[in-house]
Length: 428
Image 1 (spheres, rainbow, N blue to C red):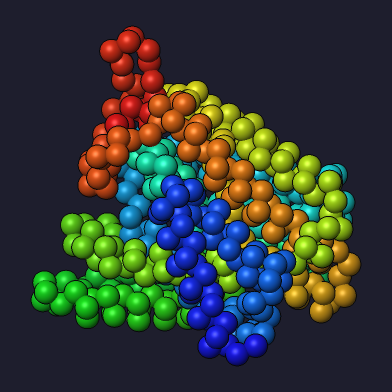
Image 2 (cartoon, rainbow, N blue to C red):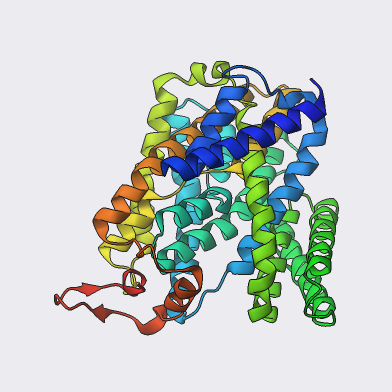
């Protein structure tokens, strides 16, 4: 297939899905995914991503790095309560999510234990490529939105690195789980350090530029970011993603008010990346990769969605800032996105090349997880948020939302009706 025509069709399909989302009010991520299925191998077969070969992988990595950098730029965890909430939920979910996902994949979907562990690591990622558009479209309370976005920004790179190491363990390139643990710390830590140093350097350059040089600032940001992601990736496999998040956080914290002006430019590019990548990766999925899983695969994904409720309950122990409404809402929003799809596609190719049985089933189960979580939660989460009273008024802008989020550390607040609500719920 002509690569130029492929990219043109993917961009057009993504922009058309965004237009339909705006006109209909339906979740954009659902329409992007559906559009990709329609134009890809599962539908009309107009777009064939496999024709790009290995050239698709580095481009996806750079564009995903842009999305993660934008997320880090916006990450403002103001207040100890919010910071503790994010850290505690991430730590608990890292352990329980990995074990639970692997057990369900083995018991219900029939994956071998080595591949089940790889699936458990891949399924940890609840990426901002899906969560952020969903949170913005449903106008979720800012505190809850920050928790969900922070969870994705932390676990998406961590899950990708862990999945790669577990795949190497399956292939025999690593000898033990101890090697996995050591390399996980080295690659995540190395990525964070590289990103932080690059972000610090970028801020020093940006501060010396005139205030009206917005175009040049954007070009420098993209240049430094793409070099960071590719450089970290070359030094430490999969370290480019944590480097992108770390750089975004450093730039956002050090530039402060100027970061908001910069993000207005970068967020548009990040949205463009989401618009083209989601249909493109979904187009690579065929029904033949899903059908062998049968009802066992569907049961696995549905059980994984319900299992998150238990994980959030365990992670919320001792957190007074989380009310039962907050926990219920957090437990129902965990869609998987672009990084999950990209990692699964890459790993399936490497496992098949090594002659590992079940590689196709692993990819099929990952994409089934994306389909069901995005589809079901994309349609039902806005309704649930409305019913629980966790939606901001339409007139509340992004600046007001950030101001509201900064007051989350106030703890429990008393509503006029006398009912105690968590700080996350009260940040309206």
